[in-house]
Image 1 (tube, helix red, strand yellow):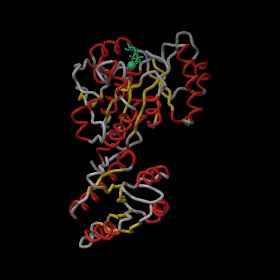
Image 2: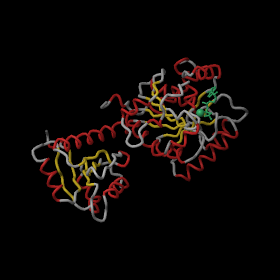
Image 3: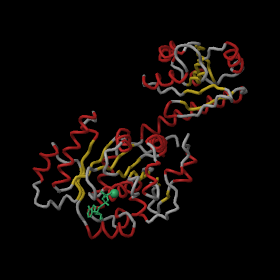
Image 4: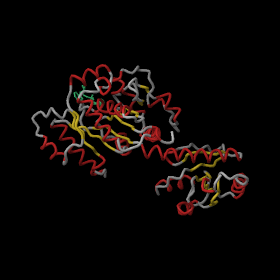
Length: 383
Ligand SMILES: Nc1ncnc2c1ncn2[C@@H]1O[C@H](COP(=O)(O)OP(=O)(O)OP(=O)(O)O)[C@@H](O)[C@H]1O
Ligand SMILES: [Mg+2]
């Protein structure tokens, strides 16, 4: 193996015998280069950018001023993407948690084979995650007012993205009312986000839980009963979104109206908030109020793109007045076509498939291309 293909490993270990043991295991191989062994967590955070490791092995029981957990947090805060493998003993189990940067665990005693395969696997996973995540677009379909067309647009947008060759997943973020269950007439025993494991979620867990819709997209459903909504934690949602981002080109989230903790966590994570407006004075009022809140939160104006739904039904409101109120012309428009949209929704099919030639379908196709067009499909790369 060429030297520049070697995986650069940094060991942070304050027990000399363990450090020596790891050195010994790595001796007769060329796949992994041990760049250094550091015994102090405090100085490790500073030295990591210089040492440029691909993978860090960190003793979970590290003594000294900066403990292992603190070091992991510091690295994250400093924006480090280097994956960490925690070295531990069976009596002190540690959970892998890629969101915190802990991609793997090695429990003592371990063999040379265990060590090398874990380091290689973590390195590979992290490379793939970076590639997938960089290409993927995550879009929240949101509005500060109900009934404006979020569920309809989110569903058809996800299907349009799939038609355009993207791997597309739709997340039912309307956690209480599970709008997509109703729209798609999903059986009540179909699994939901609550059926995912609570610790580390991996790709194979998703396979069992996602609803494969006949329209060609995968859907992560909300729980089947209203009172189950409170069991969905922000943490669960964040974990699953970061996995979906690695696996799909387009992650579309149908949101509820509330600006609560869960929704804010979702909105923080997405690349684009697709905000639906209609020619309705309450909707416009709430949209302006929300823009103000987003400014206070610190979202850049470019994070939000407006979709004017039912754009040809202005209800007496002058389009220029709407643009003035929003501070810009809405980036996208979708026309009103009740004769197409309502029957398609009532059958639980996307109108972009049932009536691809309809004006409203073309509008959604155009929206999908504008939102997702810039990225190259994940499927075209490493996968
Ligand atoms: N462009 C359109 N043309 C015609 N009808 C539309 C259009 N967009 C949405 N509708 C209709 O508007 C109604 C509300 O749509 P939808 O349920 O998607 O909105 P929502 O914002 O998700 O509502 P909720 O607050 O219930 O979550 C539906 O009956 C849908 O068929
Ligand atoms: Mg809805």
